[in-house]
Length: 372
Image 1 (spheres, rainbow, N blue to C red):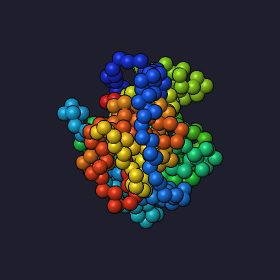
Image 2: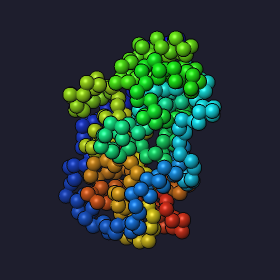
Image 3: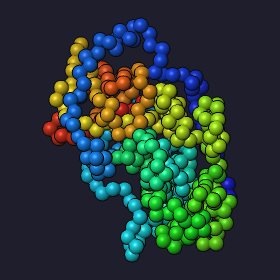
């Protein structure tokens, strides 16, 4: 049984990670932006609950292409499918049976989470086990997700090369069903109800009612129930001063975290976001009306989309170069993005959305920010 894992060696380019990409426009850039034909995407009014139901049904599937070959990533078509795997019926066989589960919240699916998946894959079939419904239970304010729900499988699939060719599978438990379990009861549930062979957790992982259990107790309890336990070191963020996040956060010890990703997006530092995620940050837009989507002038294509169409967290308002627009199965277009208080404005060279089939109604667009 492993008691400690290896830290990830981060190979990051030297740069000013505190640079705010949303500030410092030159006069010429402001003029160029003001010359955009800001024709907003006409979007039919859709009830909030209806959008949420559609978001739950849409499953986004694609694979990142090799960056060394210069190829652009692709956005595959979406299709309806049942919601992500949740707890099975009492008499059903749990999909986790015989697998190794990584434990955590996995909001951002960042490089620290990927390290957990890597360790799980070394010991067996890798699963990412997390909880849903915590905000409702604790009365927290709802937060826009960092990764769109329909894009999570695509991200996990991109981890397959790190995990012995096997993409981790996400599995979620309703938090209300386990919140009162003691640390021992929780481990017992993993063993007897879910039938897992082992668990992987970070050194700061807490579990059980009121977070009473820590990593050392997880190892002890797993041993009692015949399961392996793998505790790995936190992946440290060596390129940012921990004080820029929140010095009052007792969990903040300079490790890569979802909080750091949110902070970097809030200040518009999309390059730093890419470093934390191990990939470009992809924003998914769900649009319903393609009338007047495309405008063109001097071989340039300009599009404006309402920010409310976004299914996940956008960077700070500002100007972003070297972005990628993804639509359909085989279309990836380099673009520049300007985000204001209401719209996301896209400017594309040479190739735009002119070949897009607008007869299919509700569709998704992807925009990738940052460098990788």
